[in-house]
Each structure stands twice: as C-alpha cells, then as structure tokens.
Image (cartoon, rainbow, N blue to C red; front, side):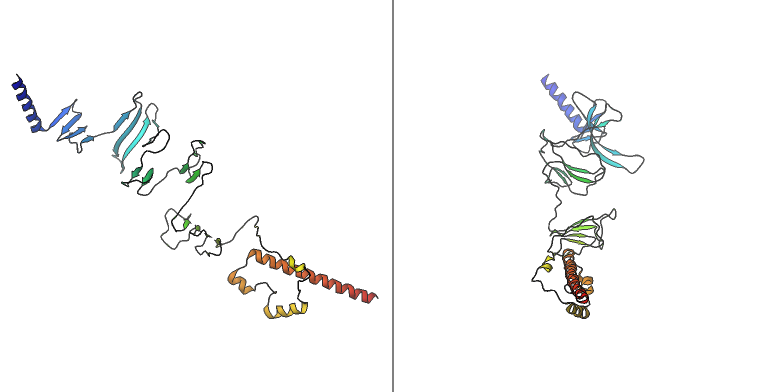
Length: 305
C-alpha cells in the first residue's frame, strides 16, 4: 500500500510538471511556472492581481484601502492609485493615508518618490504640483488648521517658529508675470541678494544701499534719522555776507553746500542730508531777515530823528 501511494504521488508530480499549471476556486486563482495569479492565467510576477486590490478593516468591511491601476476606455487617461475610503457613504468618504508613522507623529522612515535613498520624511525627485496650497508647520499643542484658502501659502502656527526661505549663495527672486519661469532677460518683481540687498523692479543693487527701487515710492510717512542744522544759530557760526553770497551764486549757479542740478541728475540726493541742508538755508535766510530788519529799524530811527 505504501508503495502504491508513492507511485500515485509520483504520477501527480509528473502531471503537474507536464501541465505546469493549476487553478483553484472556480478558476480565480492560478499557478503558472512558479507565479501565482488572481484573475489572470498568465501572472507576470510571483504574485499578480488583475483588478483592484482591497484591504478591509477587521471589524468594518466598509473601511478599505484600495490599490490598483486604471485605464479609461474613453479618454487618454491611466494611472496607478492607493486610497483609503469609507464605503458606508455615497459617495465614499476619504480617510487619512498614513505611511510609516508612530502614534507620536514622528516618522519611522523616509518616503521617496523617485529617489532610491530618500533623505527626508518625503523626498521627491521631480516637480511638485499642489492643487490647494497650504504648506503648514503644525503645532500639535496648538492645533490651528489653515484650511480656509486655496492660495499657495506657507504657514507657521507654532509659537516662536519662523518661516525660512534659504538659498546657497544665490539670490531669491519673485516673479508675478506669468505661468512659466523666465528663460532670460526678464526682471523679477523683487530680488533679495545673497548679501541681503533688496531690489524692487531692478537687478542693479549697490552694496552701499540695502534697498534699490526702480520706480516711484508712495508712503504715508518716512522717518529719517540724521543730523540737523541748528548749528546755524550758534554764535560761532560764520554767516556769509550778502555780497559774498551773491558772488558765489553768480559763479556756481546754486547755493553753497547745495548740490548742483547736474549732481542731482547723476547721483540723486540723500533724503535726510538734503532736508538738513535745506533747513540750514532757511535758518540762514532767517538770520539775514533779522539782520535786515535791524538795519531797517536803524534807518527809521535816523529818519525820525
């Protein structure tokens, strides 16, 4: 009897080797040359599934994670997908999809989309498109969710945490003039150089000036802290005589210590400095008027006498 069983087993093995294929459970599961297929008689890998692949929650079959590949028969559209849905509602309600996460929300491992060796929690080796733009530094202790906008924004809702935009020895440029990045020759709306100089409407920034603007500036108030011209009223200040002042104007075409028209055209003026100089001339003019008034009083006294 034992010999008969051995021969029967040997015949079965030979049969399997000849046909090298078997099916199970109503032709749903197939074995072919070492590969197992579900829904296909020709599995191309060790385990091949034709159709969606569902993982159900143990106590509720409506909670599923689905993986699959979709190709539209009507339009040129095909994609692979992973999603988590609650099928108890119509339409199904989306649920969170968590990858390698602990209860404390600290990542166990890094996820790479493209890179074989991801170096951050999410490492993308290509371009990233965000449909509804909120990138948020979330604080679990102060759970403020930013969800009332579809604009692209960077938010830090953690107390004491800043938002940093960092480059490596290169300027930061802001463009608002179209959908595509400039290919050359276009001026950004604003630029911050690697040295911290800001240019608005211009790439020409002088290290002497922290802000360079090509265009007009409008403000409700500008406060400039600079020296002032009250030294004119001190006794030791030497005021030019009117004849000396007249000679200087005839020779130079402008007041003393005031830049000429050509100088202003070439170099502009420093707002604080020119304000102080103009005040100096007003104070000098005031002294001239006081002196003239004294002379008038003397003449009136002489005439009356």
